[in-house]
Length: 138
Image 1 (cartoon, helix red, strand yellow):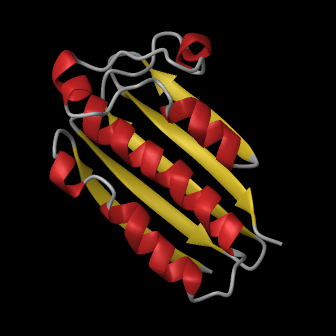
Image 2 (image 1 turned 90 degrees about the vertical axis):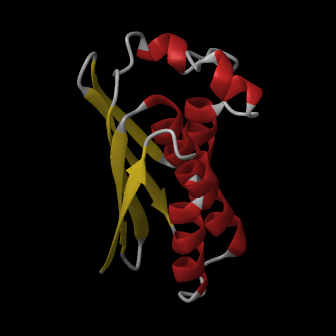
């Protein structure tokens, strides 16, 4: 098993996407089907941007095993008050500033769900959110 860890800085959009691009490089070394790599990278990028847009800070942990990729994205942010609403395409709590930069279209969580085999959301309002994403690669 390979473990990769990344610290994500809230509000730093210039570094948004760094973790997902690094993970993509690692996955390419394992001869994983390109479609599966794309799914993982899209989900990871969306999670990463959500941390940057909504939280003070966060961490992403990626575990690569022969059968699957497991991702934990944990943030110290406001939490998600209504997960069901947040899963609807187009629903967003992003600030106007974030939207003006081209982020916060309300596609993050729906895109994550579409690109992974399993998504678990653990959130506490006022404390933060942890996403657990699993993509099978066999």
